[in-house]
Amino acid sequence: STPISINRKENMTETVEFQPAKRYALKEAMDLFHCCGIKCIPAKPQSKVPAVNWKAYRLSPPSMSEIRDMFDQSGQRYDDSDGNPVEPEQYNVAVLLGHRMKNGYYLAEYDADDKVAFERGLKLFGDKATFVYQGQEGHGKIWFSTPVPVKNKTRRGAEIRSLGTITIAPDSIHPTTRNPYKYIKNGAIPKIELDEIPELELEPVSPDTIYD
Image (cartoon, rainbow, N blue to C red):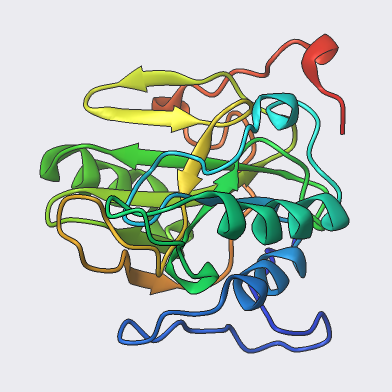
């Protein structure tokens, strides 16, 4: 099985690296993720809160045109604390987890809330910890993909997050540090079989909840 990378064009092999000092326009971020079949929605500036009503998309992902409409509309109807309209480039980007990517697998995340859990995750994934980033010191996120969406659960200071959840993407601004989420490793998103890392206890969700 071949993992996929986030590339500007599907026929490119090099991985796109976001520059921490630069805020990417939302349209560019959308296009980068869309190349892999990753669905994203706008989140409020310096926040983990979606800027749009996204409940309908927790199980069934939006189309690319719907995603573009979300970003276009959100910039028009959300103001900052002083009542000033927010420019599109100021929005954070939230990613819908648990949906099928172009590699045929479903996006999932190992989200560690402390240093011990983060280091444990890096050891568990080993050489498959290839797409890793963090918003604040000691915390960390590891993206991977599974053959089917998996159940969301918490284990030893870390969450396994998949269908029905969102995560804030790299280059977005962390609400506490006010700095961009930074890459630790910006490589491919690996395929992980359900029994490949027993310690993760990955369990498939009911087939009745999979719509894509």
